[in-house]
Image (cartoon, rainbow, N blue to C red; front, side):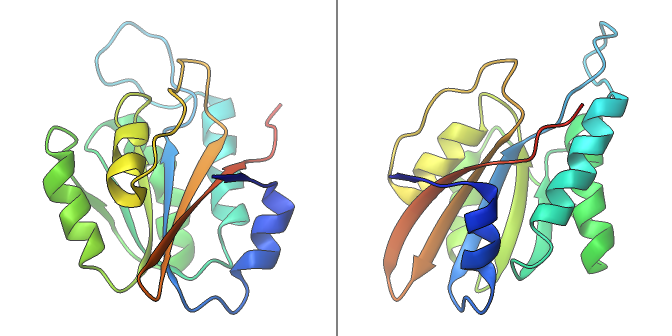
Length: 160
């Protein structure tokens, strides 16, 4: 497992022919007591920031769970590349991982603090850190090239 900064990510992504999965947890959500809150202003800025960071990665599809916070996090990237956000079921990550492995494209996948590390492990074969309720800035990049899988753990820009 290799830890690199977002600046290095920009360098790595130009001209890469490999298939990559970029997995993130949704951005900061409003603590309004509901089961399906929207993003805070900071969360909305983070979602735009992530789209900007990943704009040169060759992502062609965007996936998110059906919750507002994941859909809102995914939307800036989907808008940037001109696609709709495709929903996936976080309660069947094994089937979703198999679906992703069958893809020939690079994708962004927006999940939750409990599902994102599980999905990273299913896609990469490597365990990753557990995300806390305060972790919003990790970007996990799973690269598959010529049958070889590698995992990079990246950080997005700070949002104030």
